[in-house]
Amino acid sequence: MALTNFAGAVAVITGGASGIGLATARALHIRGAHVVLADINTAGLLQAKEQIHQHSPGASGQILAITTDVTNESQVRELMRQASTAFGHIDLVVTSAGIGRGGAIDTFTASDMQSMMNINFMGTYHCVQAALPTMRQQQSGHFVFLCSVAGKFGVPLLSAYCASKWAVRGFSTALRTELHGTGIGITTVYPAWVDTPMVQQEENSLQTTDIEVLLTPDQVASEILQAVTEGRRDLTLAPNPDIAFMLQIYKDDPDKAEMLAGESYHKRTTRSAEQRSVQGSQE
Image (cartoon, rainbow, N blue to C red; front, side, top):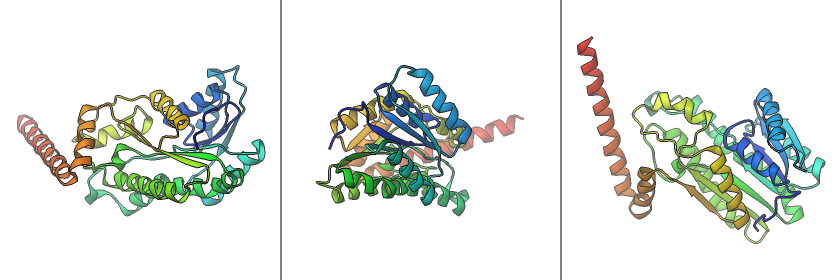
């Protein structure tokens, strides 16, 4: 069931201290929603709360800021309990908390992989488990899962990130079938590169990957709210021509898409190695 009116709605947003989470919180608050911000970064969380107030000082909705580690099941349950106690219902949960780390799989440690899965996937799972009892009781509610285009096709040097986002994609697909007829909806968001701290941090470690950032957090937030009001299941945002092309190829011929992606990556790494060799000989 689509959430068509945000005025008076209660939205819980993880990863709310920055990026898409913060932008979505701002957009909801200005539309009259009560916003429950959650993030592991307490200082950033308080700054985000103040920023939202300054952005829409006349908005009627309240803002709660609750420090939460989404990998901790008990903390996420407490987050949802406080949201439900404060406002009496939970209408929207946006799982924006996430990390992205790149690198060759040979050097990607097991602990890094586990951390990626714990935050990106288990964080989403914990939110669903904790919010579902309230949503089932009220027979309504909506989840927004922040996935990625990396949850639709494979990206060299992002194998761990892809694994975590494919997990979110599979989880959302199965969960929609399980919740059919309950009044509880799910929108899965698949953006390309977005101008967030996570992408800025990873650009240096992905030098052989073409990163062209064409989306802002505010653009993604606006599209998310529109998708929620329409009850859309899939929100794919890929303004990059090369990414849009790969998405279409993966849809039509996955084997061909993997081959093209592999060939492109091999050419870039070879060219990069040759450039380093030339630079080394000139020094």
